[in-house]
Image (cartoon, rainbow, N blue to C red):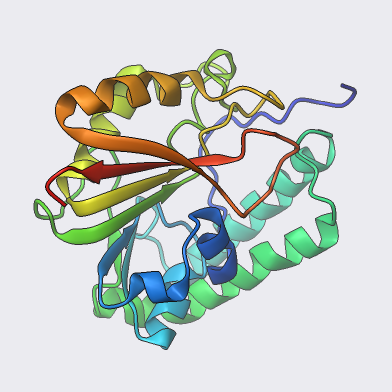
Length: 243
């Protein structure tokens, strides 16, 4: 396939809209109900802000949340621009409408930034990084994690970060901590290999084999958010058996 493979050399500050989140994790707004929900890492997305506006209880956690509004805007604009350039050069990753995709990233960022200062005061946004989160055991009914785990593994494991430090051990610890703060269910997206139209991420496959021995139910579901030309557009759903 012609073009330049989509690679990044760090985790970028890149967000998605509320509607994209629901599609990504195969959720309806009614699924949130009165649940306590954690989005980690949250980035400059519109999910937390729009959930608050609609009356849902969502906390966003990200290591960048120690920054000011102006600092986050500067970082997000730079990361969105550079990522869009790289996406446009990889046919596997090109959305059908790049202009619309770009506009959605900017919309998500603006919704996030408008809520960020007040949300920090009210505890909606928490500065923290995997694999160790500052939350209590079982604090959240539902935990969502998108586009860090598996995505930023090394290309040989199906990720986009050459020589990535986020190896299998990191992923084990990160998923363990996400499950620690989760009361019922953890959803992870995506689990496909970033450089393949048909394969799953190797680290995701390993964890899916290991987690049942730890007492979890693991299944995969199709995601409604189709962002690459892959036939393996799945999310992983991990449930605690007592839940």
